[in-house]
Image 1 (tube, rainbow, N blue to C red):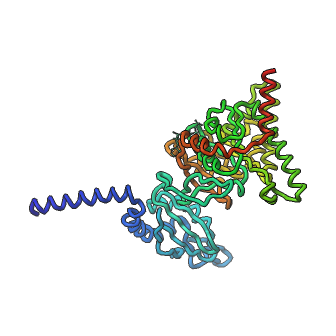
Image 2: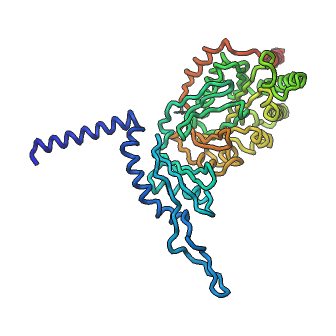
Image 3: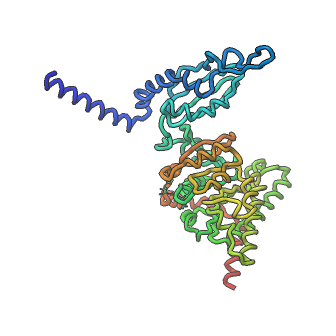
Amino acid sequence: MGPIMLAFLLAALAWVLVAGSYVRERHPVWFWYLTGYPVAVVRVLGTWRRVALLNDLSVSRRPVRGLVGDLVIKGEALRPITPRISFPKATRTGLLVVVRLHAGQTPAPFIAAAEALAHTWRMHAVRVSSPERGIVRLVATASDPLERPGVASAPPALLSALLGALESGGAWVVNLRKEPHWLITGATRSGKSTLLARLISQLAAQSVALVGIDCKGGMELGLFGSRLTALATCRREAAAILAALVVEMQDRMRICRAAAARSIWELPEKTRPVPVVVIVDELAELYLSNGTRDDRAETEQCSTYLLRLAQLGGALGLHLVVAGQRVGSELGSGVTALRAQLGGRICHRVNDPGTAEMTLGDLNKDAVAVAQSITAEEKGVAVCTGTDGGWGRARSHLTQPYEAKETAAKYADLTPELPGLSRALESLDAEGNA
Ligand SMILES: Nc1ncnc2c1ncn2[C@@H]1O[C@H](COP(=O)(O)OP(=O)(O)OP(=O)(O)O)[C@@H](O)[C@H]1O
């Protein structure tokens, strides 16, 4: 080969490499379709028989037990049949394989084999579902879609907030009308405040009253003060605001009873009270007391009021979003009771298994394991529950505090008045000055 030819080949190779990395950066989906997908198809089709056999996904043609005289003999099937799979279909983030189950098979062994399938096919993850009887869907994702989540979109709706992107590529939406109360946990620097900032930015533009309880002196929620109807910065103020909210709840009950309505949403729009979202940053601050009588009384008040709001508030347009680093029974018995009422759960990286268990354990054990595998580098990544009873990984859109502050200031004019709350804070001030 002459030197000109060699130079030409080297230049062509360099061009392919440069063009490849450009396409990979700018058009990862096309990069996947053109390079990763064909290789993955060969892997899936080439390994299916073996991986099915090794993971007990195959069935034998004949019963594995036989009768010889009076003896029952159990053995291995000679030539087991592998379940039939569809040709792997390309998706934007990986591929989809549909498996037809043989008689007697259930999705359970496929769920157990998901990790083995992911390793064999060199995929980031394989999720198993069964949309109809006799069918199992294996959805494989080539790389972690949450490393660079796309910009998801969702139609706007009252009390609905687009928080970020789901692992499946869809929009991560929290709708307080479907799931009225939420518990958010995460270790320090895991992304809780960013998520709350995103939630507040999304709700700020809506006709919703936002009430902040931030007993760390208002350092986190104080940023959004211009759009908050009330802000408690210590436990004394929190107890007063929560008490006022319970009174507001009782007023709403009376209005509903008079109109024979079972929720405020059945009231005519003109007379319907404004929905209130109470955001609590650092739940532990409300529950931990220093042991003095006054302090204990305050924590008990906060615990009782929060529980009452969680039990009865949903239908009356009073919603709780409660965030904390550690949420466990050591904070007091009230926490476990409160947790049971907070149906929506979001668990970021946590330091102790107890908090992951407390957040997701009563819903799904697998979700706890996935939450515990979130690393410190995966900021903003969380395991969240959905309204359909399922769960999945998701990542919030990065909302910087200054952006949320600007949004709050922009919509400050929309801040509704709740006179009971202002009165409660004013009477505390008056007591303090007396
Ligand atoms: N979705 C996200 N994408 C990228 N970076 C994020 C995301 N969420 C948070 N971060 C980054 O992670 C860091 C910590 O986030 P954040 O302050 O929200 O954590 P936190 O859990 O509230 O911590 P703390 O409890 O100490 O207040 C910030 O620098 C933020 O920029």
